[in-house]
Length: 109
Length: 112
Image 1 (cartoon, rainbow over the protein chains, first blue to last red):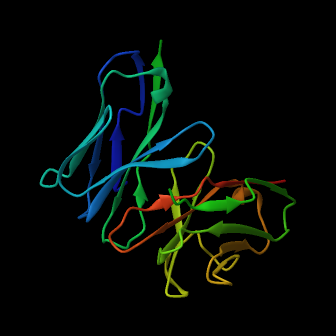
Image 2: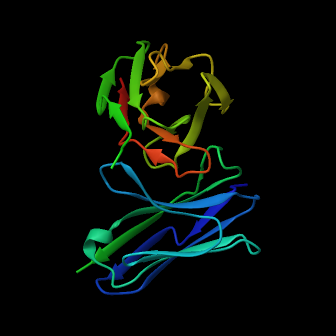
């Protein structure tokens, strides 16, 4: 069983739409990461959070530790947001990161 | 902003050859990692390294793989005798205790 699951697997949105990507995990964690991977392959860290909510520009990440669930929201989506968004968790503060399968987002003009 | 760098960006090799992938972690980081991503699949953990020794390795990280921090700045992943199934994107990452993990841009390895 995968320790980190994401939904949806693929998502197509119109420019300007509000987007939500969900992540659920089955293990105890010290932190959860949201990462972005562009077609070129590089991985960029968007958020690292262990409780509550973080906001950076048009991106918002929330986590509910009790429910083992996190969401990534993108407001006013733009074609440049098209990428794979990956949820990943770590069990301790120096641990490896366990990756989810990713959500492929395509924002069309 | 400090960043993790990796070289080469792409490498093509023949099956059975040795390859060395290089990473320069962020200078004050203490924990180092290698991950790989086979095309179309999720990123998988290979190995973590701390205090000049392996702290954890996955079942993928068999005797064909080794890691080293030869000079206090570089962090290398060696594959002794490459197989076709080693073709993947390899990511290096580093972090401080409790800090975010910073990923390098990756090395795309193709084994023919």
